[in-house]
Length: 154
Image (cartoon, rainbow, N blue to C red; front, side):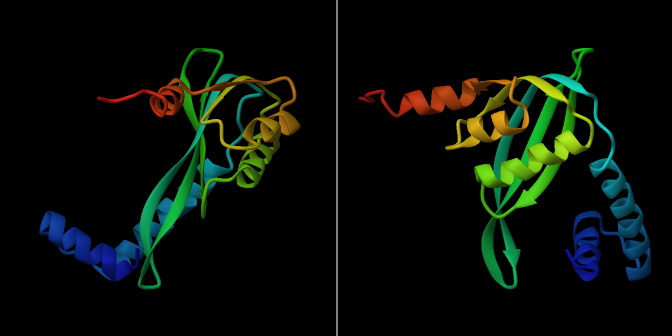
């Protein structure tokens, strides 16, 4: 969103006016924190990592296009879920997941015991190329959705 878009949204939603310079200062401060969060070191081991892409329709250059947010959520040794990262791509593919997995490894992840995925074509092989000992399981929600294709509805 542009500064003027944000200014307009704040006025419309909260009936509050904020200057363009204040918006710029805030977004710059937030952007710095986001980059720091995106590059933070991760734990060496995650028990389970859930990975999926979420497709959003966004307006870009006066056109509505699809963009995918790649999301990885890990279960650490203490049993707490942690968002490991979010990455922006054009469409979900195993080749983009390779860059996500490589990023996780570069940030300190040495092993993932179980990965839960949507069974995207080539995804399991991509995971094994970066984390060879990891076991892959199809997400229960995706299993149910895939099984429903074979159910006769009356």
